[in-house]
Image (cartoon, rainbow, N blue to C red):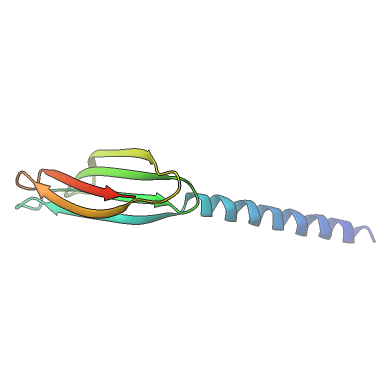
Length: 108
């Protein structure tokens, strides 16, 4: 009789841990709205951007990055942007100045 309460408590604890992990994973899951990357002629460097929205949060993240051919990041900037209710949609993206700048146009 003493082992049944231990099994019930262990099962309840396991279910609680699974539920907490599921909520944590879902709250940090993202959906990519737009992304692009460019590479120099020699293949020594890559740069690009990624715009993501959190699935269950009212914010988005814009990441601008630049990395070398060995995979090490030289620049990795992330900006959190509040989106309130509706996630933005991409209307246009253009690389400017010989692919050294990006123009991003979003709408709600």
